Length: 219
Image 1: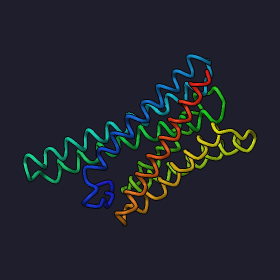
Image 2: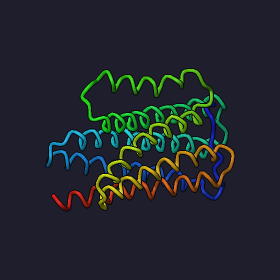
Image 3: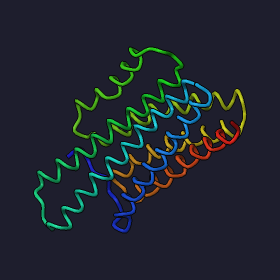
Image 4: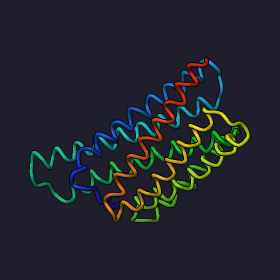
């Protein structure tokens, strides 16, 4: 097993629904980003869209595989531990791979360079630690937090240089995503933090979506 969250019993089912909602929201964010790219031809908008496409797929994959796993448990009542571990780990590692791809694309976007070598290096440095740990879930949030700090710092500088609603929304959003990543680490031992982390992440994604809607409205 690559690690499990402790989820409150009353929250079971809602967590899957929220992950599906995250997938839908981040998909809409990516579509809006691509629309802005078509209107402006800005490379950053294209990379933003690609990054949120990866994040969206990560949530959908995790949700669908979890639904399959729970449906098997519901129908068969008892399933083998090997089957449970295999499907759970598949959902977890696919989510990690796709989510990290999304964050690395965002970091690459903030660097404002055009180099496949730099992108590959950041991705390699972000994923290689997973080859040497059995606690992938905890490491995932550590790596995500480091990448998110860099992204948040980039948008914070933008906000300080140019104070605007757009910059405030996107900076606040990535600040909240960073906080949620830290809180999810606590959810490995305390169940209530899983709920708090999900709620904060939902607010963050909605802020990003609202920001893009505002930008489209001004085009």
